[in-house]
Amino acid sequence: MASPPISELTTRARDIFRLVVEGYIATGVPVGSRTLAGSGVNLSPASIRSVLAELERLGLLAAPHTSAGRMPTESGLRLFVDGMMQVAEPTREERAAIERRLSEPGPVEAALEATSAILSDISAGAGVVMVPQREVLLRQISLVSIADRRVLAVLVGVDGSVENRIVELSATIPPGALEEASNYISAHLAGRTLSEAAAAMRADIASGRSALDAASRDLVERGLAMWTEDAARRRVLIVRGQANLLDETALSDLERVRSLLDDLENKQSVADLLDLARDARSARIFIGSENRLFALSGSSVIASPYRDGEGRVVGVVGVIGPTRLNYARVVPMVDFTARSLGQSLSKLIG
Image (tube, rainbow, N blue to C red; front, side, top):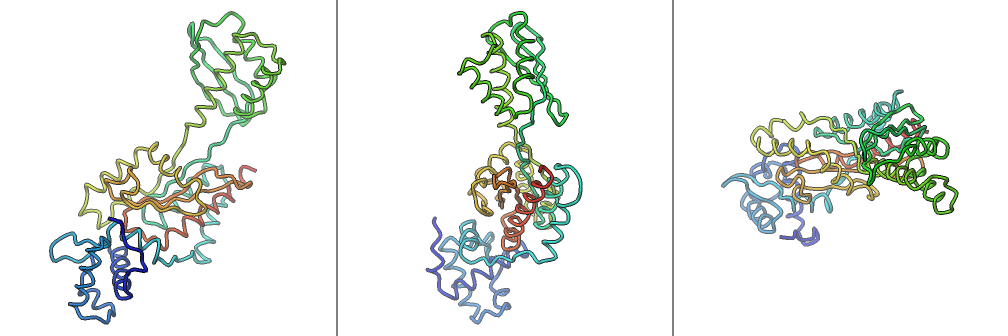
């Protein structure tokens, strides 16, 4: 059932609806008419109950138990977030604290770890950071035969990193092909990224400048293609603060929390979800079943992209938690943290 536009609600319906949502977000428990009557609502208890019943009929509120108070539905939370929420921008002290933690000396990994911890602290949920995909500059690739049609490729980066991959070939390798291919990479492709090296090699072959024979060329092509495809698929997540999800209100719904923790273990699916925020100008909010990954646990995700010094999106940061996240506070904090991380990485990476 689609929720009505906020403009279709009467003033008193909007006021009561806002009080119910804010009360539920603050306490995690349904809000009853007695609580509303004590919140300064200038209506009789019978009138309040009538408004609550109408909001429930519209699909904005639900009563989890007979005679219990009301809580917002996912549609109600979406209406509140899109049409009624007044964000609370980070204070000067909060901004300074975030910038200070991200500017501490250390490797890039330390800044990413700090970011996930910051997001967890400010949200009382789980903080997640998608690590930027950085292509290593090649120093050399050594190729070693380990079977008739299998080669071990050892990549050495300019930064001293070393990684190994198995390359599957379509035919047996002729003598000398491994050495010729390794020499070609070291002489012509060193100092470039994998994608740059692959593009340069294809240009050499197309122009006839490559002196490689067919076997060596096939070996270099397959090796570089395997490395670049692997780098594109490899997305690393840092998740901190799962313990925050086990708060007092969660104890009454352990099955939901167990489902959420299981979802967080599926790093590839979480990365796919965060990827949906890469093109956003600011934070994107996914509430409950709006995303399939967290539909069963009824959880929300607030995610924002972060950029390098040239404005290119290099990753996504976010918060995962129950649908009663304090959206008004967390959304601007996620946005600010994303901007601060981008600035910090630009200085670290240069």
